[in-house]
Amino acid sequence: MQLILTFVILGITILLFMSNRVRADLVAILALLAFVLTGILNPNEALVGFSNSVVIMIASLFIVGAGILRTGLAQQAGNLLLRYSADSEKRLFILLLAIAATVGAFMSNTGTVAIMLPIVVSVAISINSSPSKFLIPLSYIASFSGLLTLIASPPNLIVSQMLVDHGFEKLGFFEITPIGIIGVIIGIIYLFLIRNTLLPNGENRNSSKDGHQLSPKQLAIDYKLGGNLIRVSVPEGSEVIGKRLGQLKIPATYQLCILKINRKSIEGMNLLPMTYQEMAGPTSIIQPKDMLYIQGLFENVERLAKDFGLLIEKGASDADELVSKQLGIAEVLLTPHSKLINETVRGISFREKYNLNILSINRQGEYVLKEMSKERLRFGDALLVQGSWESIELLARETKDVVVVGQPKEHASIAAASGKAPIAGAILIVMVALMILEVFPAVISVLIGAVLMIITGCLRNMDDAYGHINWESIVLIAAMLPMATALEKTGGMVILSEGIIQMLGGFGAFGVLAGIYFITMVFGQFISNTATAVLFAPIALNAALSIGVSPYTFLIAVAVASSMAFATPVASPTNALVMTAGGYKFMDFVKVGVPLQIIMFVVMMIAIPIFFPF
Image (cartoon, rainbow, N blue to C red; front, side, top):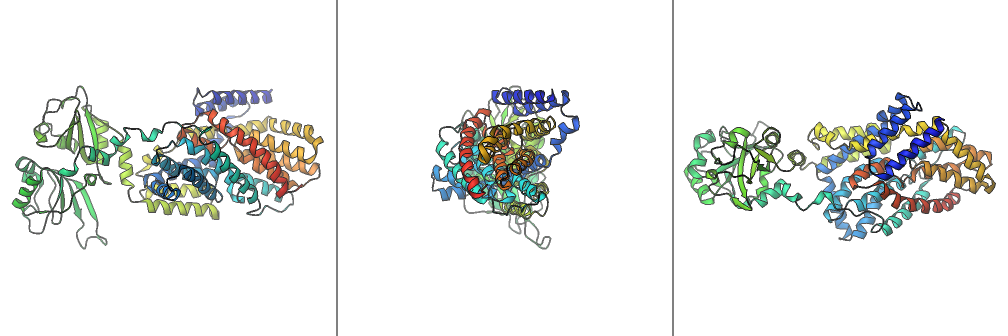
């Protein structure tokens, strides 16, 4: 009875996945509950997936990937790829897949996809293409690369250990490599040929037409701040030294606004000279060698400099200098019932209330900069404000008078990680080296990488790290892992595999090999490649010994078939990883994956007996 129930639950789960009417993670949880409620699994067996090292590793890899993206390392790597691809999308497609295969030869396919995913998305956006054209190929090639070396995939290690346990020689590090090379080459050719037909080409959600308006640096350009931002230095002996800005009454006397102060550390106080930035306010005390960033007309700045003995710096000041790790700018809209409507900029005391400067007003496409303090605000006005990122985030949360446009947390995190691409690159190299050398278990190596991304500032804080974990993928994978336990407990795997051996035994060793490969491949579409290899490796070994042929041939077939997980998004963690990022549906994997499965079945039935004879 339990065997029938297991296959009923499995069938319903597959149908729900294919319908795409219910979220994949919810379907997985419902299947998990069904196994518990029918008594097939107990609660401990059902929830074991959430403590599985693979799930923890994937969550950590999301954090590592976020650090790569945040610091600009993904963009730099993407620019390098674009340079070598010579603006050819065809060459870029092949180059990306070749790099993914090379990386995947020395680490898990999940790690490969997590590391490459932000780079691929960045490159796709750069060439104004949809990431959905690249992410399924990335996942598939990462699976193929698992056959390039012994350590690249858990099934390889499982079948190698199975041989050792039964008195045979273990597999060499590169013994399976010829099979992997054939898989990678066939896979790249197939994916290249179908990239414009079977692969979806959805709209690039990350590069919407209005997206640039939310970029702080682009906002500074849109609001035409560049011509109104002037740098003034404070020399030794200036009479403003030691005075608070509030005492100088600069806005009232000169119609100028000091936006920020760059201040160098005092000599002798620090081993290395450092520059500090702070938002200028009434209580800011001017110190020697301060650099003041002033908004206003140049003639008024000249008058200020002459009166107080200041030096106007030569060269234009870019508006994007207002954006830094500490300070940022954002656009805010007045709400219909805002208390600020009909009030003057000077009268609302915006700086005092929110610790933010108003830099400009966008009034129906017209930008108000001159004598802005006297302007009365109207409904529909958009204000460009500047200050610390913390103050901007606070404004977004705590006021009903304005609405902050865009994602200040996102921009703050990007600004905080600016310039740390070399650190992120070093962390990535250390993590990969630890995995290759097997200094620690893979999950520990990845956790080390994730923690280093946070404590070195590649990610702003723990909230930033948690925010980049794709929880839909995590729940989907964790909830699907116990399905293998259910199939094993009810004997479903053994019954089907033994039936195939009995049916195909009359066709000789080749027929049984094809049967073992096929059933392993089919079940590998719904459970992890590790679980598939664990279940079918002993069956393959017994089948080989019972008909008197080399166990290497059959066990290699299990390792290969376990990695051919292309037809469903739950067939592999890598498919689940790219499903959300690429905006894919269940049927996208079926359309692209099933033909590839058939092709690889034919190719591997020829290749495996050649390199691993019966």
